[in-house]
Length: 133
Image (cartoon, rainbow, N blue to C red):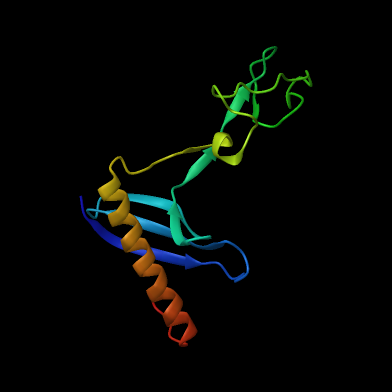
């Protein structure tokens, strides 16, 4: 599988961890949107698109956000969400699930390299006053 296009959408606030969003096209046939470029403690990395996990209300079955205390449909008090064995609390990794992600480490590295290269190119073209289409 080959990455045929990477589009970068820079975020304007330079002091935040989220630096940009990327849209990646594979083999001119498949697109993944909302890949995040994030500034971490050890440098830039990418985070795949994800969604918040929802839990059903035991009374009505309505799916509520993971930290909700009451059902948005019937107002029943919700039990605490089940945690994986050994978890001490709810954290953001347990609240989100990737929509799409690389299966192999080598493809993850390839994807991250291409996205970060495109990010650096877009960032440098913006700082030098150039605009790209």
